Image 1: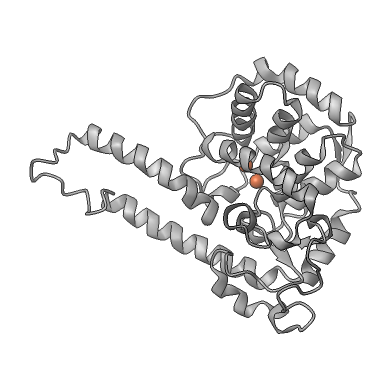
Image 2: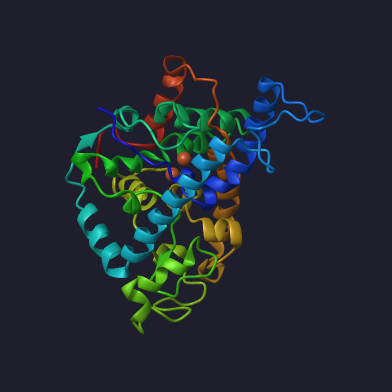
Length: 313
Ligand SMILES: [Fe+2]
Ligand SMILES: [Fe+2]
């Protein structure tokens, strides 16, 4: 049975970035298909913004869903919660499987909520990876990074704790210091208990300038979990690859430059690769399916190069 999964890109800021792109395409199609003439008077299904009313309705429902998601996320992602999650998942005592087995496991999860993603997850992974491979043929580590960047979403499955959506997907942010205004739906942090804790509610909180993101506790989700799995299993991807896995949902940083004071020199170098990666992560949800069996040997060879045969999860 399919487990519902909200792709983090369907949640708020990251989605909106993509959505602008998609709406343009969709609306163009709609106008052509319905034969609506801009010179005539027959456009009852189209409102002043060019969206059909039905799409508008779906859009406002989506907005409400996104708001509710971030309300829960912002209330519940506290410093203590993250610490508990890290301690719990560091044990890596839930499964032993290869990277490819995990891709197939994630594949059972069909995303019901993202209208742009009715393909299995493995298609999103391979489409991102193949698109990057085309443009950066020599960076094999980047191809593999794209393939595995979302594997942490298995946290939604019963065997891996069946965590609620707000603890798996969505934008991520540091805990242990004040929540930057650049965070989407910042208002919902009002109810986060950390906001009353003097240790965590100042601008720098428990951190110092230039301390390096490695020393920052990020809200818990599929990014940090997959980073943990990769690191603890002795993955040999370069630090930029691990950085991408760990921070690809850190939207306030990569889009707004928020929290950049916490970065060190290595983070700044790695951030350049994250910017490159994100372009492919957002726009690769295409209708052109990748022939999985055809590309599998290539990705298997990369997995062998950078990972042990079996990993603890
Ligand atoms: Fe992701
Ligand atoms: Fe992704």
